[in-house]
Length: 236
Image 1 (cartoon, rainbow, N blue to C red):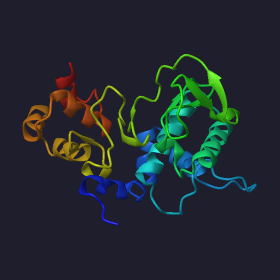
Image 2: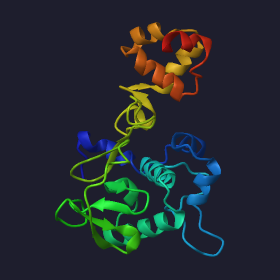
Image 3: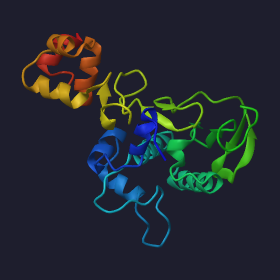
Image 4: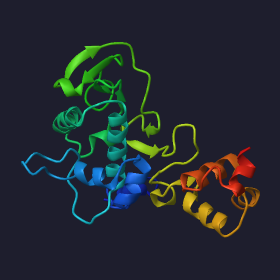
């Protein structure tokens, strides 16, 4: 089957591309936590996230699932509740990476998925409570807490992750820069390299046609301290 050029990027969604350390840094968790969530328990229980091969990196879909779970944990959900929900969605949809392929909302108590998504058609205010075995719950639509993830309206898949937060310009998008963190197509790592070579913010804005805010966001994302003398000059 011939793949349309506009869809070629989808072939990279399941290709290992992110080291454990990178993924942990992006999701603000430890590498040990990343490994634990992908590892089968000693008592034989399944891994919370889909098991991965040893010494193999994470794909974009695995990275997004990791990030979604980390976000859910920060919202107060227990690991057991998240694992139960993921297992239910996997069985119900047949998707390998449901947390990266379904639109989710969470209020910190229940993991919910819009009922107008891939599972079945229906009223958008009817939500499925996955960690209660798929029973229906009725409530007002929740304010979106997972808004750093952009979901395709048709497929439900995550298309990109605003990895530095919803109000920052940095994205991880498999269609751009081979999935590396970038600002309007410019890898954040390249901006840091130029910064370390002595270029200042105004020079980087000229070289890469970015705003000062975008450059500063990228440098901070790459670990440049906001209070460093060189950067502080541009943040005050």
